[in-house]
Amino acid sequence: MLTLREPQIVSVSRFASPIGMLWLASTERGLVRIAFDCEEDHGLEWVLKRFPNAKLIPGEKANAEYHIQLGEYFQRTRREFTSKVDLAVSEFQRSVLDEVSKIPFGSTACYKDIAQAIGMPTASRAVGRALATNPVPIVVPCHRVIGRDGQLVGFGGGLHVKKWLISHEGGLLH
Image 1 (cartoon, rainbow, N blue to C red):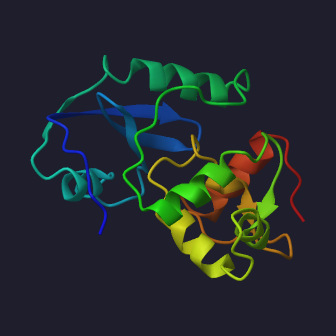
Image 2: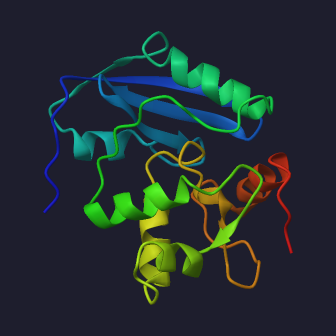
């Protein structure tokens, strides 16, 4: 069972991006969620499930650093995110997300590559499930993970957004 640190306050803000509105949530420990506008609840249900006693507040000021770094990413002046992230995930998910964070800007890897890198070469599907629940897409670049045959598969913001992000970074698609 996953034990969560209970924050008192979760700061929530919106960020207008070239791929649509993004919803950000952070605690004093760092960014906990980026949700796409296409998500029905904008990620707020996710936040409330993980932090049921937290108070949600407008977070434009608290999330300013994340807004700046996302803006730089979309302007192609930032290739890596340095802001704090507070991942409320299982140990396995953390190992997958840590490995995915190593994929360089403009590059891609397949699910099997990630499974092998974490020492579980037959866990490609489990890697896919872990990435499907990535709470901070873009910052932890799960969009850089593609199918073994080079095809785009699965992405919370939609495959058109995944394609846009890979193209934005100058990555090659098959």
